[in-house]
Image 1 (cartoon, rainbow over the protein chains, first blue to last red):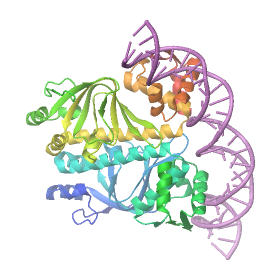
Image 2 (image 1 turned 45 degrees about the vertical axis):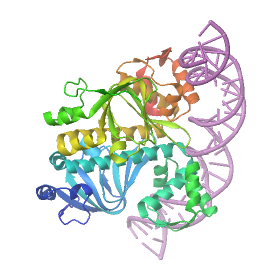
Image 3 (image 1 turned 180 degrees about the horizontal axis):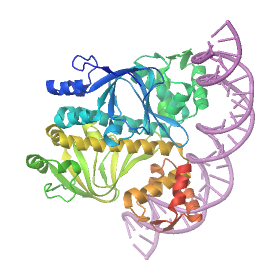
Image 4 (image 1 turned 120 degrees about the vertical axis):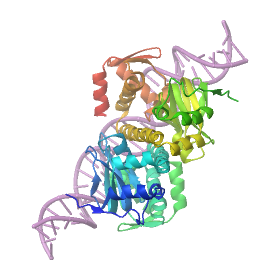
Length: 229
Length: 229
DNA sequence: TAAAAAGTGTGATTTAGATCACATTTTCAT
DNA sequence: ATGAAAATGTGATCTAAATCACACTTTTTA
């Protein structure tokens, strides 16, 4: 059984926007019902199909949200901190509708569902922040869905590289957190197709790869490939 | 310019779950900032790329939510009443990220964004209902995305028929609200591919079509096709 | 009510990417 | 360290669905 540690929400360096608006009493409620844990690469935080009674909050690390489909696993999104995960699961259903797995060492807090709901009911500002969060999420998921389903493989792979560089790491070079299979699950393609696409990008001098380190050498061109599909 | 009519929210027969929890004062606030209008088939309620300052609420009719992709339009979801639309657009961005178009004559209410936000901040129960709504939405969108991107055409078309029958009309026969092109945009396929799939289903005795009326004759088999991809 | 426009059905052809096969490299456990 | 297991790269083949082409039907509007 995983060891959970008590957290100190009041002095937490990684407070969410939502928690920022809580008053003293509310923070105390959170405090006494929140605990944290560390997950290593490839450890599951929660699993599709199992019941779960906590909202999770990513304080550090990197998480993939994935779900089994008719023929393969699919990565719905990649989450970087600070961000809540599993809100829809916990508030909408009793059972997780997807799996969350750490892609690198990650610090996660767990907040009991009923407490989370209590905070929503108590404090409109908290609720408002959560709503903003869910809305932003929905919009970016729409975007991703459309791009993934209409572009062809080179465009999708270019998209993913730019996402990793711009959104996740904020740098033109980064350690690839995804295995070939994961990359495929992320861009709706097979591992082999992704490898071929990356090989072409290397060959064309758009990227270079040393071990797990990726360098985006020509982002302008990658953008163009992403746009043209 | 479209004519907007004052509504009476207190006596409205189509109150949302969220509005049900408002108290007298809050209902008054809503009342004075809510107006309605009727949209005919193919009329747009709001358009992608244009600014919008109201949340829309579908009281009756049927709405498609669609968005331009790199190569074609895509129907993200089909909304039946009672349901809010455009919450993410209005609360997340200033500009609509997608278009909403009536598929049949529809009654829509508009609630000014700042009022909607005010109600969230004022009443945690209202916020809670909105959050439930957004969560439910996200989960079903995940499901749909995975199914659409992993099944092949017959499975996707069977899915869509079952969705229309079970979710939208609650009947084994219904008037098809989608044109061939729309159907394609909904199941991520071309019009021709959909026609071929429907032709096969007709041929195999799974459905029959008279004009715009569809009869699902063998749902068990359609379920099986949907599952097997 | 006629003409134009939009929507639909179906055959023939093309193609992106899945699938298969296997060699090579990396990672992991003993 | 060493062998087993997992992950990766790349060529050859196959296939689902897009694309193209065109006849036919329905809807719109002048």
